[in-house]
Length: 156
Image 1 (cartoon, helix red, strand yellow):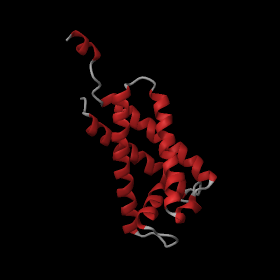
Image 2: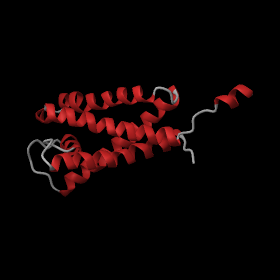
Image 3: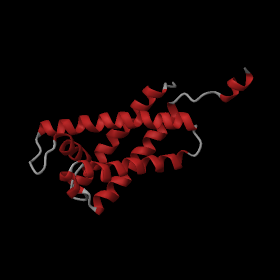
Image 4: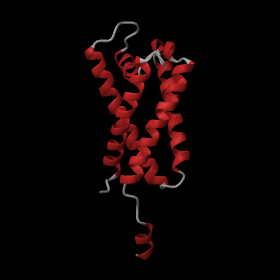
């Protein structure tokens, strides 16, 4: 079954965000990174400097992750649809860099409380996590997005 751009992008972004949250939480719980992506989102949205997290804050972090995952999924779907399925690996790396730059450069510039989480281990881990997100989202998009049929357009 093929989907239209918005639906395909949102589904791809949401499913990929599940993978993102699981990997990030695992790395956080094992002590590899100082903050999970869910906690990062909650602290940024709610402007929580050093207070402890509770269930309400975690819920806000999850909602934020899935919302942004859906939005970036739609963005990815439009990029794939506009530029075609060619060179998808280069597109994935480029879009991963955008996500990574946003997370580690723009967010700390907007909220100085988040700057302390921009460490080298967080930067490396988040880049790899976003690369995995991009690969899974792109795979879903390429598999289920309706690309224009070039042969049908030529025969008309």
